[in-house]
Structures are given as structure tokens and as C-alpha cells.
Image 1: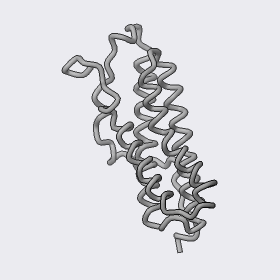
Image 2 (image 1 turned 135 degrees about the vertical axis):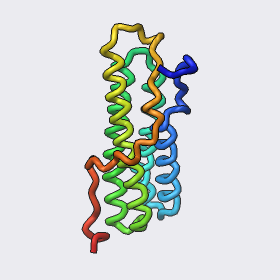
Image 3 (image 1 turned 180 degrees about the horizontal axis):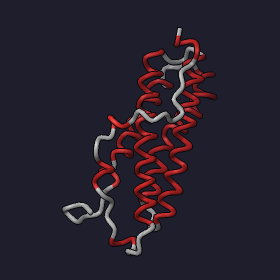
Image 4 (image 1 turned 60 degrees about the horizontal axis):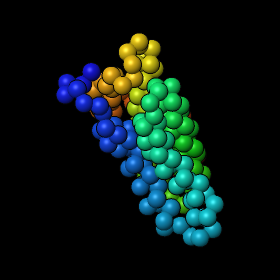
Length: 162
């Protein structure tokens, strides 16, 4: 439990802050594209990236831990969709290699941290303490970047490997 005994605010979740950042990065990339590219892959790319944070927020507002986890699973799906659109965008020369690699690293880190958060929710949901009395532990807020060597859908387009 957190020392100050106050519920964890949405803005305190590192995964939420990181997902907001990812959404803004994608928006800034897609904003430069020509109309046709903005209309199809750009729209889906921004919707996928924005839905990561939106689902974390919606899940955080739910009362039952099973619902919180469900929305985290939706966010995880959106992370994978965003990775796919980033890959396609790089292959189609819509974003630079550096933009792609930077975004992919953020998505990889977010994916790992979201999995840690889901695992924490699973542990908490297995307790018999009512939901209103449970406060999420601080490890969620820790910088887990050093442990992000786990392979979670990390791939590079062939074009940028040469």
C-alpha cells in the first residue's frame, strides 16, 4: 500500500503518462502526411495510439478489478496495432528510421510496463479485501526501463536493417 493512504490518481500512473506521450508522437508524425496517407493509415494509426491512453483511463475509472484488467487488455491490443502501423509507415517511407525506432522503443517499454500493471491488478483481485479499500502499490510507478529487455513483439522492417 502507498504510504500516504490516498487512492492512486490516473495521472500518477506512469503507463498513462507514457501512453499520452505516444499518442502525441504519433499525431505529430501523421500530421505531416499528405491527405491520402492521413486518411487511411494515418487515421487508424492515430486512433490506435490514442486508444492506448483512453482505455487505461476508462479502466482506471471502473470499480471492479476484472473490468480494470479488461480495459488494460484493450490497451495492450492497441499497443500491438500501433506497432503494426509504425512498421507499415516506416516501410512506406511515411516516417523516418529514427522516428520509427524511437517510437518502437517507447511502445516496447509501455507494453512491458502495462504487463506489470496487469499482473499487479491480477494479484490484487485475488485478495478478499473490498475494492474500495485497496490502493495500488508503488512498484507501478518505478522506472522499470532496465528490465525491458523482454522481447514483446519487437521487430524492424528489413528496409532499415541494411
